Length: 127
Ligand SMILES: [Zn+2]
Image (cartoon, rainbow, N blue to C red; front, side, top):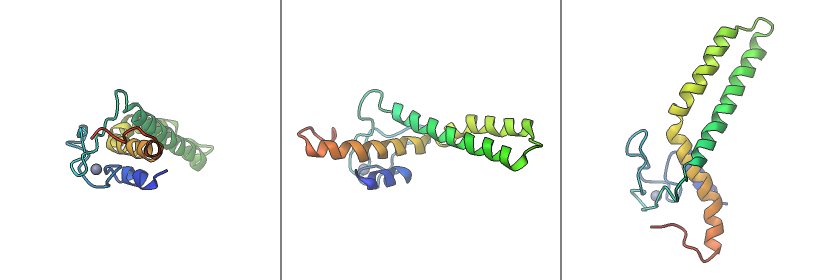
């Protein structure tokens, strides 16, 4: 497992080289890395993994806020405030974390899959 790929993903960088501009704009990812020419979308449906990263992030954030809110205010829980806070997390976090979820997914995928492909006869990436 290549931990540097995951670190690069956490930093919103190319998983292979750690450099390069991954995004053209906030919601648009480049086809290839501007530094090492790595193709970012490896196959059709590749970004489903980024959706799983986003869902995991939202579930953890929701649980922390909801359970933390309950623990800090029990027994006089401000239910309306807690509802607004958790609804805001569920609505805003996917938008705010969108680029990060994509690069984290690329880092996770690259860290796990690339090491397997390096040992076999298949090409690492379509360059
Ligand atoms: Zn690169």
